[in-house]
Image (cartoon, rainbow, N blue to C red):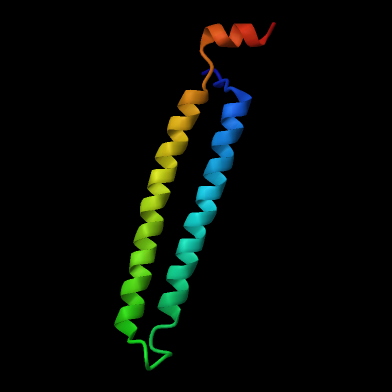
Length: 91
């Protein structure tokens, strides 16, 4: 099986976008964990609200992660070089 060839500029752009999206997902998960860990520690904020809000942040992180993965795969497909383009790159 041949290794796929990519347009370097487009692949780098796709990689950078994916990295930023992964950071956003990680931050959303961090917020979810922080909210859940605070459950019950503050009497003014009910534990159920912390769990519900943390769950929403976690769900948003998962949804955004799936969206990011799909967009990354699409960007990689767009960055692939055809066999004709591969021949021109070697010149």
